[in-house]
Length: 389
Ligand SMILES: Nc1nc2c(ncn2[C@@H]2O[C@H](COP(=O)(O)OP(=O)(O)OP(=O)(O)O)[C@@H](O)[C@H]2O)c(=O)[nH]1
Image (cartoon, rainbow, N blue to C red):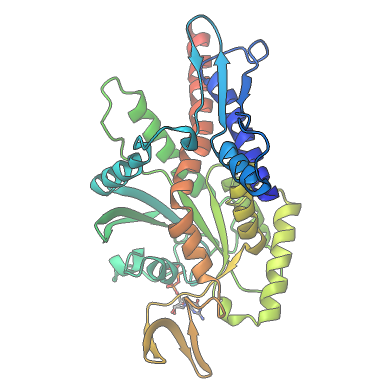
């Protein structure tokens, strides 16, 4: 067997064992007393004295047909076995469930709620418009909105339905005008924390109803883009405080705003300093290491973690470059192409938020952040109930 193949099988075997353990845990089994029996059935070659090449081929075929049966027994009458796709006698059609899921998702559509936080003028509205290639920001929807700086942080949500190739997405952009704009910015994260928790509370109340809706409307914040000014220095106290507090309840993706104002060296050094500050302050940003599902995901996410925070440029203008229309910022010295990875890291951000990790952001929101909130709230209610008795 090739070494890489062996490794792959090793990982699969480990995954199967893990899955077995998870299943046991889910079924409330005692894992100490019911260690799964792993039975490997290999067929010995019948014919002796074969040509070496034939033997090798035969052995390869046998290894393909290797049947791994994992038996998990606990209590009377429960027996489970795991049979791999290569061991089936013919096509069953299990993988067609992917098409079913695709059709269903297309019919129902998906909801995605994204929050933008950062001082006024850092390019929040421009960036969300660039991300979704449409006018989805607060400013675009309320063109006559007050331009003067608000004295408090006010949250403002706008929703749109975006459709692409038959797939509908209800996108909600939550803007936070006023954040970080005062001389004294003490506790300016509080209205944001309150809003995030209120959405969890709304969802929890819907879940606890006796007659539940078939689909609970989801207003929970799936991702928060945090805009860092391109100063080239380090994280400021307000950045540390915000990300420390809010990173515990929502997935934060920090970005360096208006990165076209930094040279390549300045950008690299700034990114490095920010990564050091994030680590030194124990700030958890998305994607978090502890939520990587498997080694493959870890490799992919490590690459993302190494280049966070993305240095981005936003625009809502198109220009002609070599006969093609490109999104860019025209300067005296040339056009900064927003989607060109040689110019900035906007494409990396777009890929993370939309093309590769959108569903994961929703899963982390539901399975980690909302779950933590739910457990805490139900424990509190339980304790209050006991005290009243
Ligand atoms: N150089 C540069 N300018 C940008 C970039 N993105 C936006 N701008 C400009 O910065 C100004 C403010 O951009 P907005 O998107 O309105 O900023 P904002 O953060 O939404 O502002 P508020 O709504 O006041 O909080 C506009 O003139 C934009 O054209 C960028 O990446 N680079």
